[in-house]
Image (tube, rainbow, N blue to C red; front, top):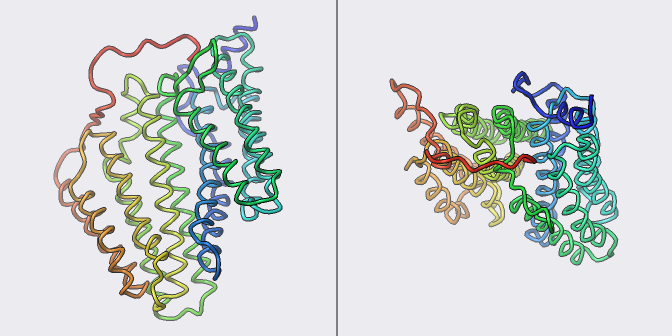
Length: 414
């Protein structure tokens, strides 16, 4: 077998299974833990008096975005390369360990564990494409991973500098610059001199597999909120008000599931499968899922606040989590519907407006009543979805991102 053939054997073939492998599901277990660390860090910031809450939340957002980039690039790797190959399995296991290190370091990432967090992040973001480059040998697709290695290596300077400076504020500035550089690479296709860019929208991927992975990360986010609900209530005094908050929190999570999977969520796999350019639709929905997951995580923080303090005085920051989290989810879900069907339901837009309007009013309510109001808005949308689809056949995907026309020529290395 020639070196080109050995490199080509790493790519997904026509007989490759579109389903996520058991190893990938194993990998996802780390992100259940990682997302709990993200939520707990925000909860600790909100509950600690005297802290600059929004500065701390911004730091946690930065750490979450770093974790998200690790997960999403790993998902794209297993959608492009055969996950049953030993080298790809090693990449997944190594990424799993690195993600675990990041999650363990995350609560103190802006303090004494900064270097641990940064080194774990860079080891994955540079090591993963470097290993794939070596495994591809002389195959033309190796130029894609060469771009990523070069781009991430430049960004590593900001990450390492931020980890080594003693001031948390300067660290935040440097890490923000490093993260912005990394996300710019993803958005622009990691352009480097002489090679140019390679946008993920033009990559040859197993679209059905990629869709399933994004459905799974959304379920992981819901699972993380279930953990918050369960742990918080089990450690509470089991009061009647606490039980009401517990039940409402579970209801909101169930409504997130219902609203997400109604039509668009169920048809994501089909939409990407029939797309002329699966990478284009996959790239767009990846950004949308990032915002939806962020909305779910913010709401999870609200669950703990409400269960622990159902009748306390509503703080302004609490309203951001109790009503702002669901509003952020709904806004992204409206975009998701547009990506699949080319339209947006008026009920979702009305729900976003209602939740935004509810935020200032929530300051006059108890946390329990504010959460009940948010649940009522979501329930109204779920009921409207059910009424609109009653007796109608299942819609077909009609993504505006895939309108009829000549497909973009795809370079051999993509």
